[in-house]
Image (cartoon, rainbow, N blue to C red):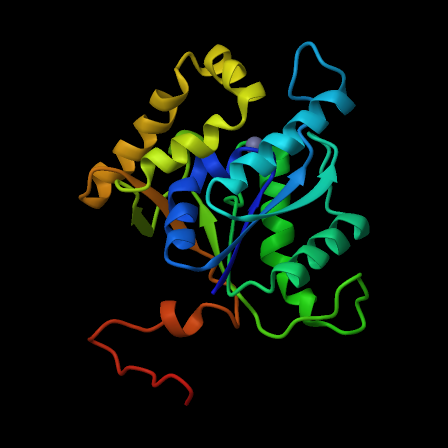
Length: 244
Ligand SMILES: [Zn+2]
């Protein structure tokens, strides 16, 4: 499968679902990391262009830990809008990755870059197949499954799917550690060392799921996409046969 992760900022994918990305990669799937904004406000000392260049390199290093391909959309950090330009950039990313599965932010996440990138993915992924919408790459067939990743600290997110990341947690830490410029910020903002910052939600989701460490997801129930897997009623109803 081709699995496309879409994050708002460099490091979001690694922090919120890097353990799952590592498992996909280990299983031989082609993994793509699409980063929507360039993180150009992510420093208290460096100007936007300088910190964006550093974060681009760090994002490439984070993706390289598991052999994921990086797609860098380069929108300004904090100013991602739903516009013609942004939709076309996302559509081009879908066409490059040809995903079977897309994992993006939760629609009601805490930050506008998170929620807007989620909205564009969830509502516009189908446009990648429309020939009259022109981007650099040709249109792709299919309507991939969309899943939402957990929110930071799990706030306001009720999971429906858990992935056991006990074995891949060390890889996740290694991926997040590539974002050197951000790690001191995180400590300042959240008061935790990097590994502890990642460990607490992993153990909490693990506690919910019945394993040591987990990452949490939920599907997008948009029409035409997940309905065979997710709309099947329970045993008290007649079951629909796939393909009929
Ligand atoms: Zn973010």
